Amino acid sequence: MAEHEEHTSLKTVSTTIADFLKTPKDFLAKIFEENLGRLEVQLSTRQLFVMSKEMFELFVKLEVRKERTIFEQKYQELKNRFTKKEEEVKFDTLTKAQQTLIQLERKFQLFHNMNSAELLSVVENINLLRLGQGEKVFTINNTTKEMFFIISGVVSITINDNEVALLQKNSFFGEMAYIANKPRNATATVKSDSAILLTFRVKPEVDINKSEAFMKLFQNITNMLVLKVEEMNRKLYSNN
Image (tube, rainbow, N blue to C red; front, side, top):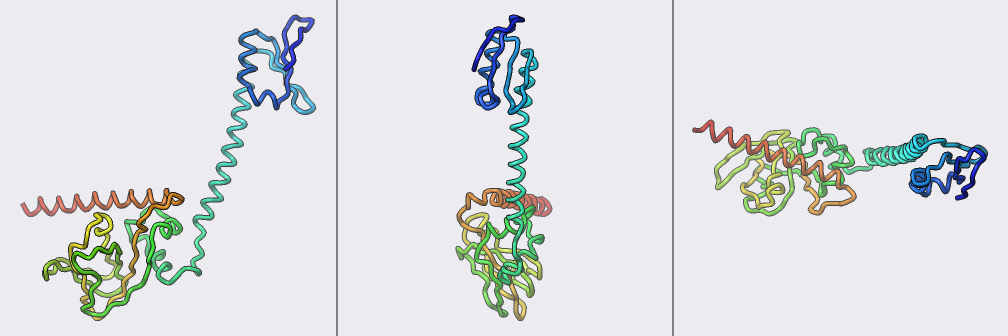
């Protein structure tokens, strides 16, 4: 940084744009403390003159805004690239069970507001299960955490041999064992001649690289619990 007196008695600071951008606050302090009349900044083949404190402050703001704009552009480019990569699920490379889950994802409140890549990143053990009449899907006190969707057939839910529900095609069940983290409180048995079930479970460990997907999942689980509590309250009050 070089200082010199001019014939007009205005003090001038001369610097390069590189040095200026390193410590712009130092130049600002110089103007306020020493009441400089002019700042001279070398910009490649041309010079920029700031003739007052106000104009200097404006120059600083413009430089900061320019840097912020460049940063925001780079951030948006990376975000768009990441989002595009996340949404590109090669459907034909997936298993039949995975393809089925993606095709049916809108039927699951559990996966509300999640794209296909996010869905696949939070679940595992996706399978298609074919069972015959009388076969058990799960039994009471079982500690598995799989969830089930009926593609075809009928499933009976019983507690102590008493049927409490008869689930038809497009029914989703078994999720409470995962949500409540408790053993099964009922037994599920195929009632029809046969049944085809889509089965999967949520990954037991949260992948920090997929934190946004898990955040959406947990928000959906919270909403599901709220709806279940409201439904229980309605039944309770309707019986009184």
